[in-house]
Length: 322
Image (cartoon, rainbow, N blue to C red; front, side, top):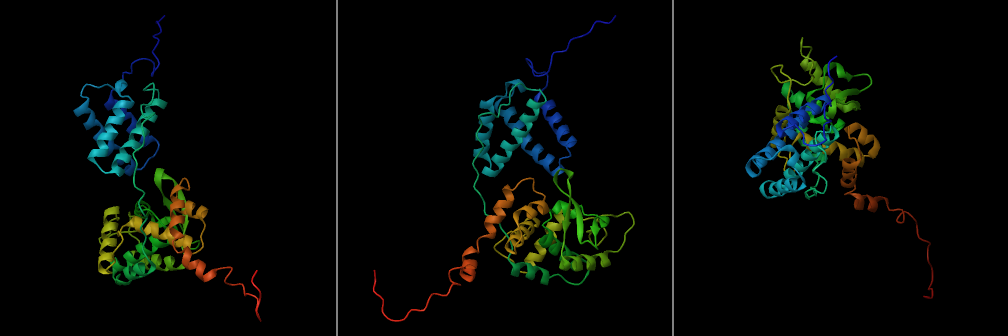
């Protein structure tokens, strides 16, 4: 009878995992969770910075030796070397890495405990005005590219899609009768997004120009029939903004997403339906849109003041002051 070998549980005593193998295991975990390639690339970029820091400052360090002091040292170094936002990205990345390693019992304790998150400046959300959107639509010509760009701009403004969601939109994901589109968001989560009559007209006009191309399911294409990527979309929008002389706001797909959210709330939409349409997991970002949508509250109050609508009683003769 073969003698049973009793293995030592992971997490008890010194771990046999190295920093490199732990990071590779973390990447595989991200892929298993269906995180987007953009998120995985985001993690890889910041973990490369962490590895470079360890190689320079702690060349002989082992995985079990990474403690709170080492992590604080790295975050402090990031604060001096990069922007506050990037330093915060590094914090978020390490938190995700070490939480996974602790949960999988690769390490005994998470070294992030007690490490303060870097403070970042709360930036204002930029959004286009109605006039700026109209100006960009006005420079879209009636050729294939112009009709496509008009459909892209209106889709962004009417649906609030992420650029990755727009690029991933398939021809069979659009329901023309119901006026909805099935988009795939972060974590490969699908959601149904409605669109209005104006968007339907713009999308269908483009669809008539695009036609049916065998083997190509992506809805938005280049003039050569290639699927658009995020860089081509950003370049097309930037060109529309330049020709329309739009200034004072960053011209990007995400600015259109902000614009949709703000316009939706200002037109009477509620934060809960907005959260669903944007594909947000919580109301944190949606609340920021709500705050921005209230910037015209003074003007609205002047128009619809309840007290101003009340007619004061007519007064005749002199009255004694009390």
